[in-house]
Every structure is written in structure tokens, then in C-alpha cells.
Image 1 (cartoon, rainbow, N blue to C red):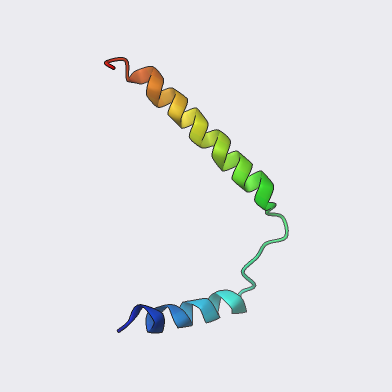
Image 2 (cartoon, rainbow, N blue to C red):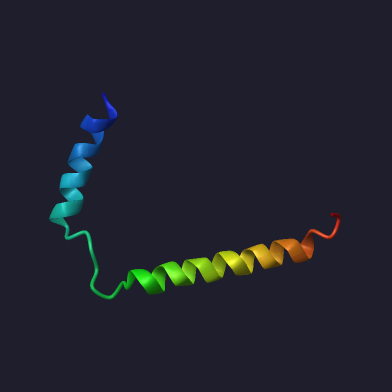
Length: 51
């Protein structure tokens, strides 16, 4: 079974279900993910004092 033949039904299913939600703003979602990753980076560097 190739990757293309396995992915094709999933793409069809995703398109049938709509695929997008009106309340999800990509800028807010991306910005939130960026802030969370920066926070995790800051926490990690605070605990890693052996460097």
C-alpha cells in the first residue's frame, strides 16, 4: 500500500467534514503557539543551570 493510496481517503474524509472552523483564527492560534513555545524555552533554560 503506497502513501498516496493510503492518504487519498483521509483527504476525502477531511474535505467532507468541512476541514475549517470559523472560530479558529490562524494568527491567534500561531501567536499563542509561539508564546507557549517561548515560555517553555524560558522554563527549560532556567532549570538547566549546568551550562
